[in-house]
Length: 488
Image 1 (cartoon, rainbow, N blue to C red):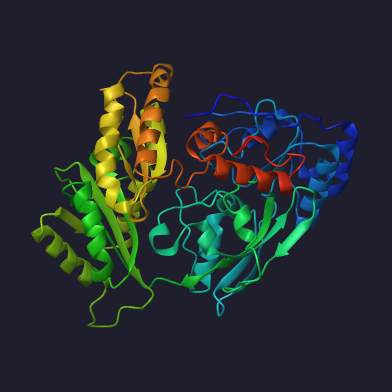
Image 2 (image 1 turned 90 degrees about the horizontal axis):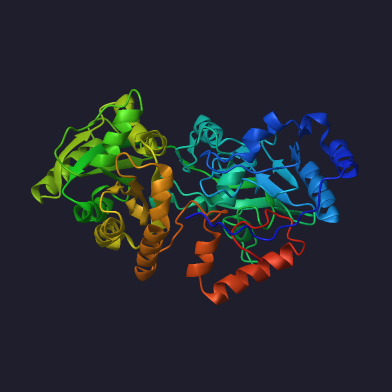
């Protein structure tokens, strides 16, 4: 539920003198002053938030970032850091009252080094995620962060929001994929923590302060990323399953059956699948089965399949036969080629654009213990329908790590303004239920501006006070993405 209270943020303007100094640092090519050209930087990806910036500043190096931040710190001018601007919580979008700058890292897009022997890659913050995946693959290595927006999102934003995605089950969130960082602090100093070390026990692990902080504590400018062996034997399957309880039981048994090679496990509803098929051209129903629930299951191994040896597909076939006999799987199909696997993944990854085409809706990025997902789905749908009986649920998500995008479409014919009248009550009911399940109201999308009030409502005083103490210590002038995540 968007938080309507605008927090107190610095309102110092970008004066002509400051603008001239910024131009000296980044040159004319690094400044955007025209309103039309600024528009993509002040409008969020969803098109639902639009703010203001006096200027968009696009440094080309860490030293330029530091110089820009130092100037703004001296002048008390607020900074909204931005990478690919694909976030869903408004964290990279300036407020309408913002009088400062947007600092975009999009020009800082170089892969600085690849170490295939040491399984690491050093990159700048403006690198597009898909470019990093392809760079790793070119060295027979694998970078596992995978998101629907990977063709446009940038690694700096991915790390600043601690992005999740479809490989968290096996590899962890974005913070688990990082060895070291370089960060420009709110006073313009550069912290160089670009160490390619898997073990470093020298005091506080500072890099974790900045991952998930959404640009409120500093600007990530470079990162040393972990790589893995490239997958050589991959099996992707689309399963019609009895219900969510069957789905979590299938996942539980899949770990041993695959010899710990489960890469992804995504729950889809029939309603969500049909919505994608309606709105996304070129998608095909993988399995015309009479069920309300599907599971997208992928196993992968870095070991090439040897002639005559049992590979992932044979293991999957036997596993699915066993699950059918147990009554958990009703029907299933295994992708026979890359195109079929890509179609399955396109369906899963296209839910967000399909839902926008479908009409107004509500979505909750939440997590609970994986074993409690079936109970939560039942109670969560009931709680929403008690408030709006005709609301259309379509929960989906990364059940392997307990993360559901617990989503609803408005009743057929209901407009956004009418749905908005029900939103506060539904949000409170769903978030209270998440609290009762000892879950999280933000599993991977962050807090941004949308959930500032909800974070204050559900986090303890000790947690909030500790976070505010860290913010005040690093950013006493409150210029770094002020008003996002926390009100200080």
